[in-house]
Image (cartoon, rainbow, N blue to C red; front, top):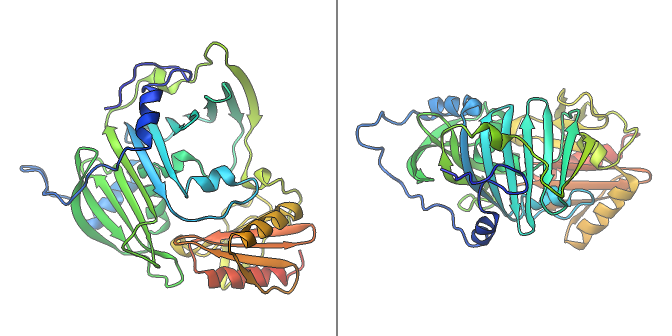
Amino acid sequence: MVPASSRTPGRPALSRRALLVGAGAAALVAAGSVAWPAGATSAPGPAALRDLVLASAGRPYTGVAEASGRLGLPELPQLEQATALFTRTTRIRAFHAGPDRWRVDELTPAGERDTYHLGDTETLWDFGSGRLTRVTGSTSLRLPRAADLLPPDLARRILAAAAADPVTALPARRVAGRSAAGLRVTPVDPDTTVAHVDVWADAPTGLPLRVEVAGRADPGRPVLISELTSVDLTAPADDVLTPVLPPGGTAAEVRAVDLTGALRVLGAAAPPARLADRDRRPRYPDLPGVGVYGPGLSGFVLVPLTGRVAAQAVQGASGAGAVPIEVPTGRAVGVSTPLLSVAVRAGGRRGALLVGTVSPDVLARAVTELAGQPR
């Protein structure tokens, strides 16, 4: 159970100083294979467990999680905070009453950044600036945030994307003081960089407690691990889900910004219907220039860039060891990490960023085709 000594954004439910001191040294909960508790119902099979996980969004819980990534992504202009989530350890506190009522706190060395989600409204609290920001409107594609790395959200997103891939059982293990049933998803597409994804969930509720994602380059060493280190499977109190402006804080209101807005792209051309032998999926019709290609864990995303941002990205990636990609026009480079492949093209007033869990060759073909088309 997570103590809740205070209910305002200025004074969070856990002692902030205690969490920050522990964040750097806290290890993941020891979790070896364990026998299912005596007298308990036997663990569900992998297919049944997958169904339980996918149906667990309404399960309430309160807990603290730690997510560690070693994807080695290059720094990209305007995306530094998002990429940092996958290249370091992130400490997260969660209060989840349901899909439309939750609060997630990202704990940082400087304090914390909290997100409150109540129905159609999101409110952000930044301890460092002392600002409470109400976000109006919504977007179908946004930058990643700490909440996306929580085991329940991460596991459901991956299992939904890999619905056609086979699952096998893993031995139960101890996670956050609970016996958790395990399953492994193994993608069948040879072009994906994902070797397998392992999920351990509380069997009675299906709530995911730990997720490990391994790349093909080194399947024995996960490149992304997210685990609830403590969890209480009861609903949080209503007042902890309500943002309150503390004395001395400031308030603001902003419109929701989608990914293209974050990159300051205006008037982007429609994405091609097909790239690298993959059809574009009708995923984000409201976002000009953005395209999603390929199914599940063997897909990639095309995001338009301004010429300036694209040039900065190509230059920065080149300095970090990116591989040049020969294109008909402009300049392009590719970056390969243990899980994600990245390709960036710059040319004139427009550029493009391609990211996906596919082999570098797939993105090289895609960016070459893209450079040869009128934009």
